Image (cartoon, rainbow, N blue to C red; front, side):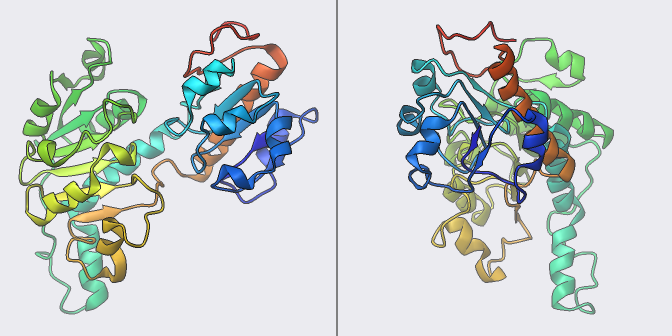
Length: 340
C-alpha cells in the first residue's frame, strides 16, 4: 500500500489499523512524483492518495502491480482517470466524509461577511479604542429574507442548503446533472441556468466538481451577472473561479465580497495576485471583502480520521474481496467484480 502525499503527521496509524496486519505500507509526504523511488511505484498493489500530487499518465505507467487507486477525499481532478482505465485500474474516491465540515465552512464564510467578524477583528487589532465601532463592517447586513444560490446540489450543496434555510434564507439551486425533484425533497427552488441563479442571489456558494464544464465558470463575464452587493463563496475547487477576474471584480465593485477556501494553485506562488493581495495585510480587500482559508473547509480531527479510514477500507475491499465502491472511472475489463 503506497501513499505518496500523506496529509497526516503520524506513521499511518489509522491506515495500518484499518488495513490489518496483512498490509505493508510505504508512506511519503511529497508533491512531485519523481521524488518517489521507482521501486515504490512498481511494488504498490494499491495507492491511497490525497490532493498534493498529480497522478498523471506518467505515474500510472509506473504502476506494475496496482489494482486500485483510492482518493482519500472527494475531488479527483488531479488523477488521470482515462490513463488508469486504460491500464484496467479502477479509481475510487471517498465521498462520505467531510460533508458537514464543508457545509459549515461555507455558511461560516457567509456569516463572517454579513456579521463583520474579520472587519471588526482587523479594526480592533489596530486600535481597541478607535476600532470599537459597530459601523466598521462594510458588508454587514441581515440574512433573513435574502437569497442564497447554490451551484451543485450534491451532498455538500444539500447540507449547505439545509443549514441556510435555518437562517431564514431563500435558497435556489442550479445543477443540470441532478435529477428533477431533488430540489423538492430538499425544499429549495431550482433555476434553469447559471445566469438566472447569479442574477437573483445575494450570496452564491459553489459546490460543484471541477470538470471541463465548470473550469473557469466564474469569470469576468459571469461575475458581471451577479448583484453589486453579492458575495461569492467557493469551497469546491479553485479552478472553478478565475481569480484575477475575481480580484478585478472586487476592486471595481462588480461584486461586494468573496470567500475562497480553494485556489487554482495551492499554496499560491509569491507573485500570484492572491498572494500579493494578502501579503503584509496592506490591501484594503483583505479581511474586509476578501477572505481566504487554506483548503481547510473539509478539515476537522473527525473528518481527517474518516477520510483516512474510509479510503483504506475501499482499497482493502478491492484487494481482499474484489469489491469496488465509489468508482469514478470506467476501467472496462478488469479482474474486479461489479462496482457497488
